Length: 232
Ligand SMILES: [Zn+2]
Image (cartoon, rainbow, N blue to C red):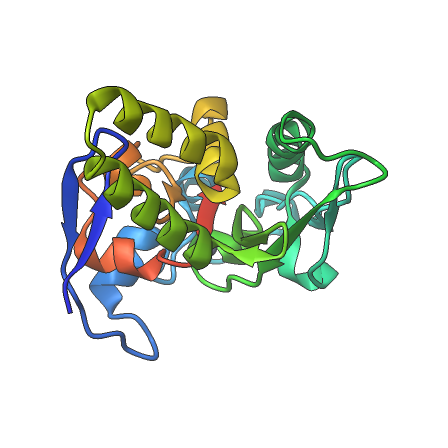
């Protein structure tokens, strides 16, 4: 099966089928998570190698990880997943809430009618340092479903008779599709982790068409067909 993703410009981007392994292959994991191998992420690696000499390591020299906390509810959104699925550093928690709160409000959600946000537990790479979070559902609908609906809408728009109608359909889907709009809001916020030599750690179904890492591999894209991964 060949899967296609349409860009908002109507361009078709091919997603080649890849075999999904129960555990992703090491090269996928390494491009996904720079710290997949048993080393600390770059932000801590420099300090730890400088401090670490045999026999000289003391607890004081080991860089401390800020204490992780579950992502709290916002005013206009609430977290529906178990707390252990969104344990993150205070810095990442702050950044995610900075995106989610205005996003929920702008899309008509409120304290009376909050947006449901569902996280899934990530265990590898920057997740191990609580520096990454995976968003699996918005408004009770999975990110994979939002992506499929986006594709269908872009295909329909591409087949519209006149360019004006085409543009209108794209605009409507951009306003309606919470998965797409959250991805763009995260992208606009920026400041996400970019370890040296690795792409910006914002991945999801729209990464190839919208960036920031448009050169994302088929494998990496496939690994994010049903969630958004963001790290700081
Ligand atoms: Zn992740």
